[in-house]
Amino acid sequence: MTNTSEFSIWVRRTINWAVTVSSVILCSILLLTRLPGMELLGIAPNWLLIWVVAWSIKRTAFQGAFAGLVLGLVQDGMTFPEPTHVYSLAIVGILTALIQKQRYIQEDFISVALIVFGMAIVGETVTAIQHSFQGSRQLAQIWTDHQRIAICSAILSSLWAPVVYYPLNRWWQWCNSMEQS
Image 1 (spheres, rainbow, N blue to C red):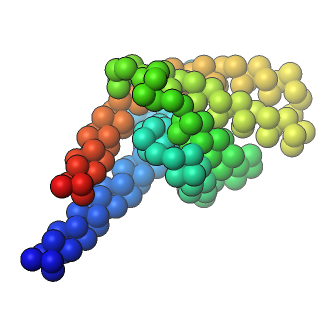
Image 2 (image 1 turned 180 degrees about the vertical axis):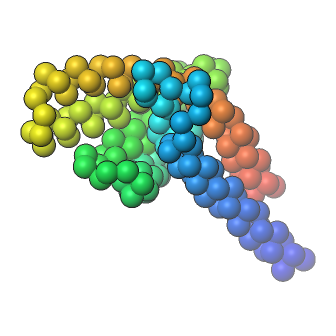
Image 3 (image 1 turned 120 degrees about the vertical axis):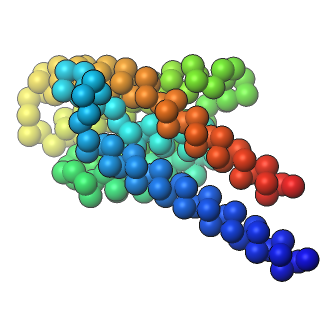
């Protein structure tokens, strides 16, 4: 009985990790894809930011920071690493985890979309600050571009957030309920 129980727990955990890693890979691929109707003023949804928010909503600040760190490194590996995406995604993971969800979150879709909207603005602001410190462009141009990029990214990312959040949240809830039983 014990071997069967231990085996089924191991299988569930392995499948859970496979689903989690597969969803990161899918979001990474979508980050590079420009499908028709998914752009606003040349800006696409930030799929990895959406994933970090979906992951961090029901996790600790450390887990959110770690997810942001890892996905920031993934995004830096796929794109130009300066400015780095590590800072913005780690901060997004920490802030999302620190939100008092029981107090503020009532409806999943709406609250997740609002959280993603705010976190996209935070993430783009961190990136703009990094551009400012680099000094490669004029500050006025950086902050003018920041406004356009932040609002477009926030709108698109928040609209697409339920597409990532809903299936992953259901999956993670199911895995947690199976481990507790």
